[in-house]
Length: 395
Image 1: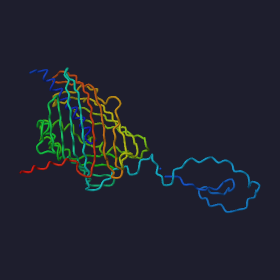
Image 2: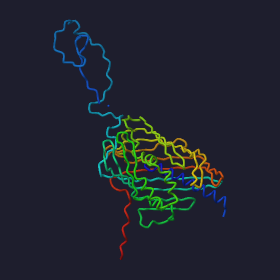
Image 3: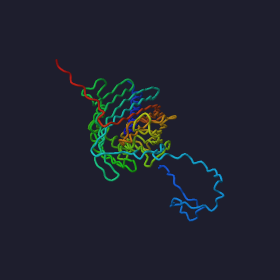
Image 4: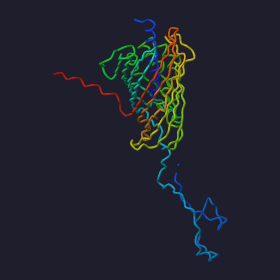
């Protein structure tokens, strides 16, 4: 989930790029078990202490006439849990992140985005396939807080805009197919960039992210024209909010099976506008199909809001928007390994649609957008980067 919001934003930016290009062409064509305890009967022993009861001594009964009287019917006791049987509807105590200093873990995140854009009577389709390979290394602990270094090991990217492919694959020395453009150079610059996150294991939240300045410097070296926009979009709060879904989905308190919790996160992208993202999590307990894994489902809703002020450095102005998640979204699935204390895998799908009014060169343009995005993450003790091909043997 770490970059799902970034990918969503990137898809929106690409829609703006398409709209700008089309408009320009039109303008200029060319709990424990309870133990049974014997208690004294306060009717026969008024001095009995209900908190400390000793076994009754054998004493002759004064009224022997009652000896053979039948006992009154006692109410049946409800079934109580067995002594060694744990409750099945409570979140295990181990459902929390576990870190070990200098012991890394690795993730592969795949995102596919399909967009249908209608602008000025033209239908434009585009598809994005992106894979990020991450390395996470816990480097320092201070009480409830851990500093964790995040590194981008590699990237695979393929974008097709109306039949025009752009591709990049940092896992191959000589990638085949597609074209090498400024966009692919942008992705190339992402490789080996890193951040340091401060994660609070008590609140289950990312408190801060450092490394933004170096990150921006690397990206600007690949494309100077993007530097002003990136500085406005990638604020400290934005980086923290974008990293929070990776670690921030666990509840700070235990939950029973089918209990829910919600979080709402604003994501401000400056001149590009802002997103309001709501997560509704449901704890499903131990998953039968995945050993050591507990299942959490998540329903996500996203609403986009156009920026209040225009940015003169952009070739377009976003005046209004109705872009949001549509219909009943299929809940995503998050599998958490309680033994290892980390995210094992996740699968999430989102559908967004709506209209944008964009002003380009003083003219307003209506853009209709439909987008389907699928995101999957898996975690391992070893890198998930594909092995490089073996060199060909010379005869």
